[in-house]
Amino acid sequence: MKPTTPVLAGCALLSIGSVAQAATMGLYVSHADHVLGTSLDLKLIASSEAGARRAEQKAMQEINRLTGILSGYDTQSEFSRWAATQHEAIPVSEDLFSVLQLFDQWHGQTNGALSASAQTISQLWQQGAIDGQTPSAAAKAEAIDLAGQTHWLLEPASRTATRVSTAPLRLNTFTKSYIINKACEAAMTVDGIDAVVVNAGGDIIVRGKHAAPIAVVNPRASAENDAPMARLSVQNQAVATSGDYRRGVQIDGNWYSHVVDPRTGEPASEVISATVVHPDAVVAGALSTAFNVASAGEREELTRAYPEAAYLLVTKDGKQLSNAKWSDLAVTMPESTAVLVADASDRLMSAKVLGISAAKPWNPDYELSINLELAKFEGRFRRPFVAVWVEDEDRNPVRNIALWYNKPRWLHELKSWYNNTRQQEGFDPASIAGATRSPGAYTLKWDGKDDKGQFVKAGKYTVVIEVAREHGTYQIMRKEMSFNAKAKQETLEGNVEISAASLDYHKKTGNP
Image (cartoon, rainbow, N blue to C red):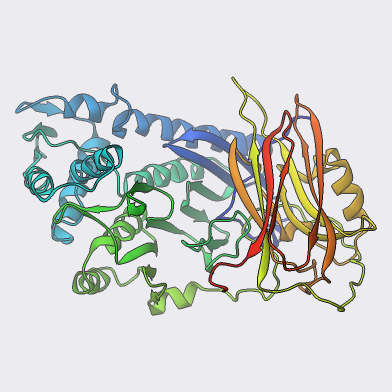
């Protein structure tokens, strides 16, 4: 495969329709792993590739600069070195001083719900996971006392910070939003840049002249192609999501959120996900975390204090709570079963899906889980292009499940998928397209419907997984299964690119 520019992943997309309004503008995208503890996707609308590259460079330089100041994971960062001191007024950078001030501000506004000392509680529960038991009441009381102390004293006149406690500290909560917002601002200073979208692990900043459709992940839907919970259209705003569905600890079979309340020593439990949209990135990041642990009364106070905030909360029983501002941003969810959360930066060709008999239809109580693990390689390597689809007994494509790629220009490297889609009228590859994925395990689902959203007939179908990687290999895996409302599992033999794969045909969760 020839060199490509990685594409923006998942949650944030710039509307291609809006790009078309300016004929001289182009869409430029890039991806980086292991940035701010997650993956980072950058999308730019620019008048030239050279300008886009300068903007990308400025954004990454700003991220690296601020990471070197604010990281709690890098022992050589300015914050880590300052946190290792005791009772000494240390001159600190403007950014570190500003973030410490913001923590003081939000600690007060949330009645102590937000605190850099939440790390004290997090470590307690992480140790509980290692020990296999929840923390004792005495251990929690000790941690709460430590977390509740004053941790630093700030002197604005001299811009010094004095560390006055021994509590473990981390500048989490809104710091990632702070950093990527600064990165956006840096990119926008380059001539010819019309819009910037930065997506760092689901925290998103949208700046400039174009709107970005945002897909909000369902916190209880784990598959890569599960339908999003909501879609928004966002411009010149930040989106932040916090909840228990990505990170946390498992103790004695129970899942506990990584979002903790330093006042109680307990993980968040009533709210499992909070998404906030606000023009100010710090506000969005802070509120999304605070809404996980704040009481209903505290949430009302915060909402009144920040009337521009749009929010969607999901409670542990699945109830969704949102405000009018959220409704203003929401766009209609399509009826199609195709998942549109991924990038569609270039629309491809259209074609014809063969009609499928309605006789003996698929049992809607059943679904297929497609599990695959992308192999890990040492050193620098290109992410693979991956296509997953289902064929009937005549090897005609029935349902396109997923397409992970960078640029359509090189999609012909996925030979079988490419040849199939060239013959399919009415199918838009953009509807299932997503960015290339990093090494790791992924799950996709097939609900038994074709690309038109109609249930197929019961019978035999073949699941196809095709992979191509620049400077790597080409692989294709096929497995035929009978889909007749009888649960079954199949294991596929791994290869250089897909280290493991399996199929699990089963009743949907909640069906007897």
